Image (cartoon, rainbow over all chains, first blue to last red; front, side, top):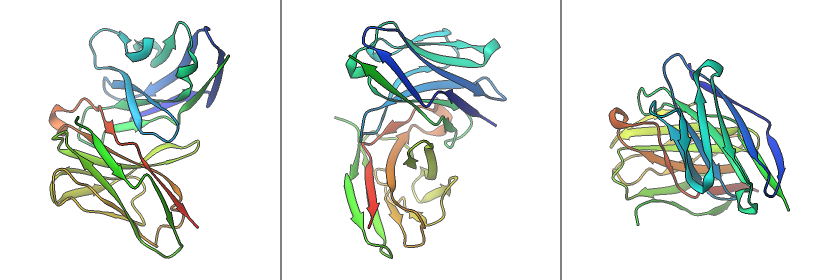
Length: 114
Length: 115
């Protein structure tokens, strides 16, 4: 079975500081991994995805994530936080088999302090 | 522009009433999904459909019903049997499973409040 664990339901960083949002996955097969962002009262938007190509994935808005098989991790980072990064972030895993195959973490709310 | 349209954005309902949330997509996607979002619980799958006239229950289907009469449309009915319907509901779509990398495209959501 596939699952993801997001460590920390709330993360606060100062504007300009490093953003690190943690995600660990469990999968019985090589996974596809995703990070989505959700702004208040809106749907989810794809930030980036890992689909077994390069292990370092670059996404929109300056975010990137590194797939580490040995650590079963897919942490999201951004070198310098901006006020507009304040949102909720969801990690998700897919086992690539069938339509019902995306499993979401419980989310991490990022607050950016001016 | 292609995308997913959900309506209404906000909806209030009295206890005992059924309500239907609309979801329309013009992405030519085969698969469509309904998720429920509650604070601190992430997204939970209610129903999904891979083709017209066919749909499957997700993890929390009790008290909900759906139909898929057209490829573009996947309405969700929240029935009076749903014990705690107040939530944020998200509709999503994706390409057919065989070509699916798991990437979902989401609408902007409908917030249902039961008074």
